[in-house]
Image (cartoon, rainbow, N blue to C red; front, top):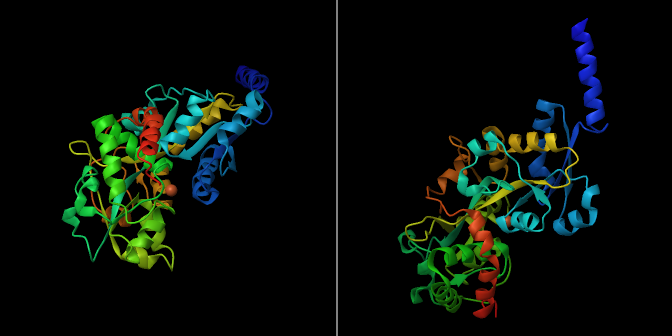
Length: 336
Ligand code: FE
């Protein structure tokens, strides 16, 4: 009897404290729904909480700002520290204190103030022609400015987020003067004006226009999935340059909880789920990325590209240097 009464009271309290639609959680995602589906389905199966994913191509900050307190979004999910930091810097997130997030995510891959959390990584590496480049020739990012690469490098625009993060990392390790020299050196080694995406650079290597390019690791997996692009992928090796003494540049896919989250408890549960070792491995496998939790492993194909030491700079430092990195990129007229 008393048990029943307690339950009834607890139930009443719950229904007063939480809105009627409380058994859901809403994600605003820059990541494709098909990458999210296996995870969101598993989360619902485990918790009974429905997950609604709104896929956005761009404009997440603007949308969250426009919606303000009325935003249905609980969690944002995106790639690249610059996009995560953009949402945080706009004051649209709130910190999450969670022991499991801290246990499953290395400290350099989450915000020191607990606003954003990385759940997978990708390395920014060199794609090198199998025919024209010996793997031992590529050792450091610094080396890409060496005149031996003159007319042999292809990259995308220097102001793309992936390039800006790499330049920010250079700036963090070596300072402004050295980074300016480096950007000038890399620019003077370009085979053509920066254009196209990471895969377009590998195509250019395949076509003989250049010998090495910069790109994210997972594109190797993506190209191998594609009948036309397979040939491009098979014409190159994946090589892991380092910032000397620091490691290979990595970036993240990650999550943050919105400031206006209408379902904050569910949001934390979802974030903890996404950062759990099992979910990291499922999600990393779907996009050829690296899970980050202790003891987790990338899929065999990704492992076959080689081992590397990731740069251990906190990505918050990289995000903070973004404006300076863009300014230096424009100073050398990298895309010109
Ligand atoms: Fe990408």
